[in-house]
Structure formats: C-alpha cells, structure tokens
Length: 298
Image (cartoon, rainbow, N blue to C red; front, side):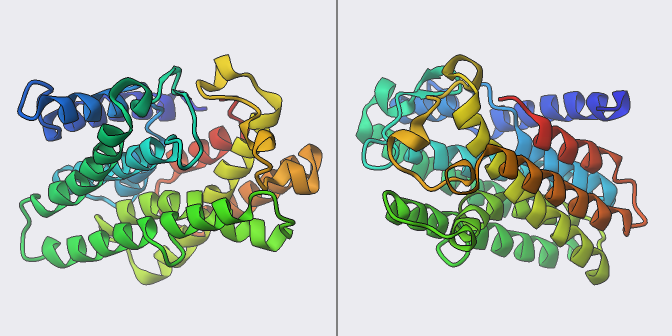
C-alpha cells in the first residue's frame, strides 16, 4: 500500500473512532448494561473496512465531513450489529470475535440481541440527526434508503443471511453461492462505497462505474474470508477458524477449491480496478483498498 494511502487510512480510522465514541451513549448512562455491551462490541478492535471505504469514496467525490463521517459510522454500527447477531447460538453459535469472547458470552443472549437492535437503531438515529442544508437533505434521504436496503431482505444482508442458513448441508451451485455472498456480505460493502460518493457530488455515469467496483469488491471480501477460514488460524483471524466446514456451509473453497477461489479473486479485482480507471477522480486509496482486501491474511 502506498504511504499516502496508509497515512490517509490511519488518520481516517482515528476520525471514525472519535466519532463513534461521540455518537454512542456513555457506558455509565442508564441502562448501563446495554451501553456497556454496545461499546464492548463496537470497540473490539475491528479494521473499520466499511467506514474507510465510505470515507475514501467520499473524498474522491468531494463530500463534506459533517455528512460523510456519520454515514461512515452508521455503516460500522450496522456491520457490528450483524456480527453480534451472527454469533448467537441460534445463528453461527460462535464464542470468539475479534480475538475476544463474543457479546452473548459476556452479557448473555438477551442483552446481545438487544445490543444488535440498539446499534442498528442508533445508526439511523445518527443519520437523521445530521444538520443539513436544503441541497444536502435530498442526498441524505437517498443515502438512508441505500443503507436500509443493503441491510434488508431484498438483495440485502438479512436476505443473504437467510439464504446462507438455509443452504447449510445442501448442494449449492456456484451461481447460488455468488448470490448469497453478494447479498450477505457484498450489499453492505457496496452501500459503504456508494453512499460515500452519494454524500459528495457524484454524477449518474460515475456511479455506474463505482457500482461495478463496489459489487466486485464485496464479492472479493467474502471469497477471501472463505479461503482464510480454511487456510488461517483462530489466533490470526480472531474468530474460530474452520467453522464453515464444521457446519457444512457453502463456500467458494468447498465448491471450486482454494486455487480457483484465488483466481476468481484476481479476476474480480482486475475488473474492479478497470472500472475505477474510468473515473476522472482521485481514486488511489480505493485502488489500494481493493488490493489490500484481496491479499489480506486476517
């Protein structure tokens, strides 16, 4: 990664941490148990990939920070809510997340369910609370709709999770698996990127190219996740390695093998970067993020 991109990401990650701390209720505020659980889950050391994609896209499209940062933080709240719920015994039943005991192991299942609910609710409350000019207000409406759809049932995260659960132990085609991945993981990554541009001054033809980049990147992220579940360790991942195989989950390695999975990632990144090259924007950070996500080891 280029030094300029790394400096940007380090600086913006700090911005996200400060803004999240500002947006979340203090751990001591009543009812303290839920606020401690929200902070425990949100500040567990995640990479902040989704908000960083939002900020990188927003900067490329000249977005103002007073709109962009709350959008980036909303993406991280929604992502964290999904992890808290995914880890529950009724879902993936995992004891470890980001190298720490999962929320339900520390606070109990009921508080974990409510923690996810609270983070999702706070994400939209934070977006609705942004002070806006008459020019910015319509853009925020579109941003909120984009995020809600990405988190929902129709081609969104919840719908993808349902398909993923129903597919366990069944024979899944590559086409069906791609649909699961594009919805379950890809939709929120795509929304992270597109809403950053929407917060700025993007044009429809520009959004078409950015959309192709975003769709490809969302699929790259999940395929790499699938590969790492097979090839990495629990210590490195910060979550239980080998879990997909143990529950007979459909993954790219299980269907096409590890080598072909990696070849697919290479092709998707090439197509994503080709789409970015058609934009007359400063997209260096987005390029570096795509290459990083394709080569990550945890």
